[in-house]
Image (cartoon, rainbow, N blue to C red; front, side, top):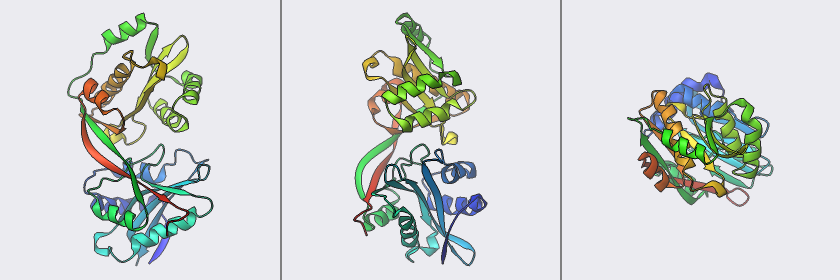
Length: 302
């Protein structure tokens, strides 16, 4: 067995391996290429996929992303061919990735790669993967959920938009000219990771970013299609703390869901949700999947 870094020429073999291994998920080669080979922050993140190869056949893979600034690394997608398991392949791949981490990384996390994640954690129904991580020192530290919203009917936001306009709040689709507003807003609220995702939404055509602006200042936003477009991904969204409770969030949410419906999606995925009750109330979303988040103290784990 040899271990080498993958490139996009390996995509057909990687898609076949992961499609067979991740039987709870369905995804195209295009989406997988996005996950494995699109680094949203090349100046800050080291983005690699390692493959184990035997007789010119890929028998396993593991994605590794390193953020040296934060002294943190991520294990992304990983899998071993079902006929080759329990032969040390996954262990060899993880050990190879961890040698790459060695210079300064103090923590590893599973799957929650900033700006471009497949899922926000591990679906515990992938029990073999869960067991492997725990044997290697990863500890479960939090749960999170994905919701799914039905898009059979469009949402009518006109009355809410008129009411907010009367209160001095403009709701509109963002343009590139709004970049200074975004910089100021995310500098004060939510931080760099969400600023990145807002930028990805702004780059879509039409823009997949909706804003609330009052007195020349951005006070809320919602985005969609920043990643995992074929699943109809919504988010992130957020409202400045002093402006919560005005009904802005539900309008921005519904505008994004209408966009996804117009794009042909029958349902929308709302990932990594905090306020479940908000989404249940304003778009009828239901919990679809639960994920367990795992992390590793890279300075002490074997």
